Amino acid sequence: MKKLMDEITEAVMEAFQKQGYDPKYGKVTLSNRPDLCEFQCNGAMAAAKEYKCAPFLISDTVANVLKEHPLFSMAESVKPGFLNLKLQEERVAEYLEKMAEDDGRFGCEKTKEPKTIMIDYGGPNVAKPLHVGHLRSAIIGESVKRIGSFLGHRMIGDVHLGDWGLQMGLIITELKEREPGLLYFQEGYEGEYPKEAPFTISQLEEIYPAASARSKEDAAYKEAAMQATYELQQGRRGYQALLAHILNVSVTDLKRNYENLDVSFELWKGESDAQPFIPAMVEEMKAGGFAYLSEGALVVDVKEETDTKEIPPCMILKSDGASLYNTTDLATIVWRMKDYHPDEIIYVVDKRQELYFTQVFRCARKTGLVGEDTKLTFLGFGTMNGKDGKPFKTREGGVMRLQYLLESINQEMYKKISENHTVEEEDGKRTAKIVALSAVKYGDLSNQASKDYIFDIDRFTSFEGNTGPYILYTIVRMKSILAKYYGEKQLPQGAKILPARSESEKALMLLLARFNGAIENAYEETAPHKVCAYVYDLANAFNHFYHETKIMAEEDVMVQAGYIRLLTLAKGILEACIDMLGFSAPEKM
Image 1 (cartoon, one colour):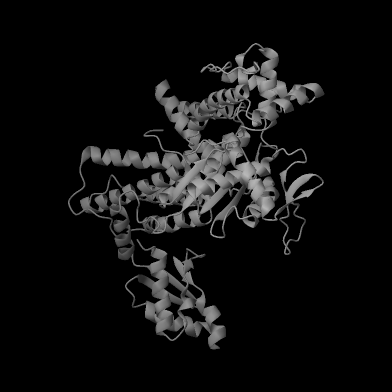
Image 2: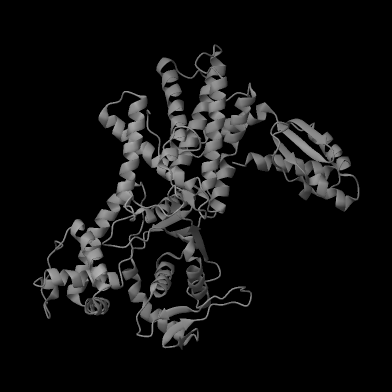
């Protein structure tokens, strides 16, 4: 379904052309003076230079053409040369009725050229609990994935586990110290290893920090961990079996935590999955003349002539032949291209890693791991800070576990819901969990990803202002009106969205008409915050209309039915939007 803005622009371009001017000057935008008009065109100002005349002479003649056009109720030329436009109420109503008939998509067509897009938006380390530092990547990545999926692209989310390197050696070494008699440590053992892990997730989460702390004080212990890491990477059976246990226990716990965030991944791959691709990749980089030795390390130059700051070489192997994060990320690109042939790979990571990913992307392109037609995108996010403006911490100064953060917000939300209403405890807790998730996700996503933001539980859980609970309260209000209407009657035959009868109704209708453009723009700019901005404007417009309009008291049956059709469309669009943001609305609040 063609965007309403495109229809308006086409009409204005035709008017410019009809009067002998280049149609390129007919570009239309939303009005920056909504008190005067709904749309505006400033093209006459630029055209005046080309046609060497006063801009108002151009805007006057174009306005005369547009006054006769059935799309506009007002086409006004304003000095020095602006075109102010308003749409016919009947035309807007017709457009919305078509949107309403397009069940579930509301006029937003799926792309005719679907792409395969992989998103790397997890990055948790195994054997460690998720903490607040994992929140932004998960929330932003999930929303980007859902927006792309809505538009018909094949979106593939990969958690990209940190399951390789010294941390594995540390766990193995600590476990060996505690339980040296385990079969996994017996040299030459060729039998089957137990199917059950020799530890629980709680034990595993205690083992790693203990091992990490000891390695910083005990050189011999660290040396043993490095040796264990080496033997694991060389394929020692017992250590490989332990790695499988670590992954199984960790991933089960991670999936539960991500499920609480309503975040999912199509792939649960880790750094270890990239290891088999490293040897051939390294040899090809050498053979192609890209990789060379520098102070014993194997590197690839990635600087370019246009660089204004120093871009260091991308290190492929350390001087002892060990791989690095760079190596693993490049090898991950190899298997992603081999198995999925993506048109784009998006990395949702901390913006402080921008230089690192510049190196990786340039190296991948220079060495031919990706072709010119594959896009590599760095979506860097800012820091989630506490009210003191510093990175969010526990009261004790440590990094807060994500589980504890979500539990504290659930409790705060339950408290607010209980204060406002008498609710059954189970219903209240279930509703609180849904609303709390909206508070967390909307609180994050409503900020531009690259910016730091203050995580303020009091503000995020408020039912007023630009918050998730306010959006959900608006949807629940809509559900309540619809339930009351359909509890008493049915839509009469021929019911449809009618032309606006008030300014607030028309403002709501014009916002609904922008749905397809808003979603396409959010996708093109990889910007979930633009969906949030649209949702907030739409919720405000509906609430303004609701407070001015007596929907259930309307005596004209067809007018009331028109309101119900409009309200149903608004509810559907809001629900589609919050689904793309990664949360849903309860039935009651």
